[in-house]
Image (tube, one colour):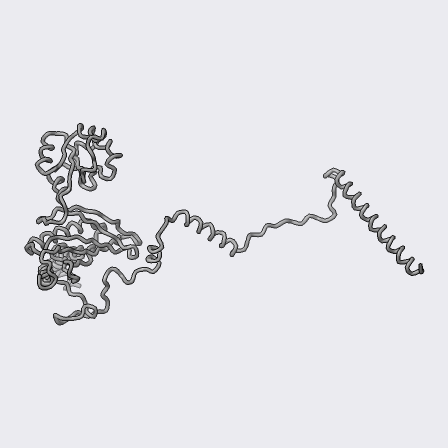
Length: 383
């Protein structure tokens, strides 16, 4: 073996020895640290002040979005795909016809899309529909004639709108449209019971009738409406669980004193309700027939006026136009005519203008009296 190889082998042996010796020392130090109590330990490196930094804004936004999406998914109900797509696409155009920057028509024949719509009277609209439904045209001379009334559901406060309402109105002249409904009347005295029977109530009774309903002897599905006299208000309350929404109450007029009128309204009255648009929240519509084309024009006009007045009574705001427009239709004819409503319903704007004009007239009369007074004339001369 050469001297160089001998030296290299010794160096390797020494490095191994030194490495093993270092490892032994490290193990001894670790054992010593474990055996020493925590109070005697002294860290050679000073402790750093720990700081907690908030997450980035993007991270926080992502977390909040995830939670909000999860909450919305829990709250939202299932919507079919077709309805969801229909809502996403939105309406084709506004439901309420808006006529801006259109000139008024001078002649009798004009294009309605280029000129302002000219409202006509109800008699003219009825006559037009009789001509279009003649046997030589659509061949339906006994067709129903209906009205579509557009409403402004906006309230006085911003972003507040009326709720849908349902009404029952007795028309002056009846026609074959709805079947006669069955009415059950709760009355205590014999006089009120006889009055309800003469008016056309299908069932009449007092406390004994309530007990029979609770026991199940009287089927509630046989009757459409339930009315009660005012002296039966407390006795009818135990039937709340059975009648539910049909329970007589003062709000819808099913509790009162005049049994004849109540039976007539709920058995022969014409039902109608308003519908709001999902996109235009201030747009409401009432679609209701008011007669046949074979009825005289005077009877149709009386029914038309009664329905308009009943709709006008449902207004929630004190001023402004509630009924914005009224169409008259008679299927199968596709024509519809705008009919003036001012002769039947007095608008609040006209009332305001009339009151203001009367106040102006009073002021002018006072001024005239002041001018005619000689003392005022003398004061003016002195000035």
